[in-house]
Image 1 (cartoon, rainbow, N blue to C red):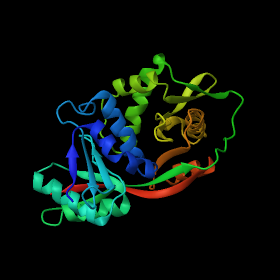
Image 2: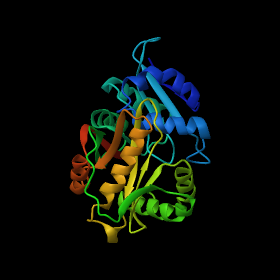
Image 3: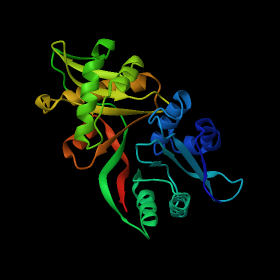
Length: 283
């Protein structure tokens, strides 16, 4: 059965509803990104290249057993899928001339797809190894008397945009103007700030709750303020906000190259779910 691909986020939700609901943890990126495109339009991430979505059925009329979302300029994000589905997707992209410069997803599916994509003309390399964590039971970090969380307000937008930019640099992604994104997240009440003596020292963003899951991201502390536990406070505040909003599964991703953050989240009560990888393709 060939992959079905569309620019229609609503059609994607209709086709993949059962698939997404069956494993919302490993489908967390697909859920949040497709919902944003559904509500804001296919050009929300790029004003030239629209978002694309796809799903795979092993048999005609059978259940969906694989899916992806692609919002240029970002790499496509893969949901859980078999090796056969991953290889078929690579062939679909190649035969249609689709420009793809990498993927992000569960390690096995991403590596299978990358090997098929580059089999004839190119190679792939690992850009980042990540781990998906789920909150088991929140363990609040020690707090100083003058430290407390609060939600960011519109007067914080400039600071949040600047910290978004710093986060992008830290994770080696494209830097840019994050003013619009900061205003959107702050306006939605999705940025928790950690304050010491009334001064913001760290932030943690969090998503809306969809299919019972929500994700903490980004978490950022300015370099000159790191090593003081501020990120722990901000992350705990964002995690608590998601639980208050009704999330059964509170998730976050970590960079496996950063042992400090991985240890921090485990101290807060997060437990590993799965390993993910971001791959780059070179012709």
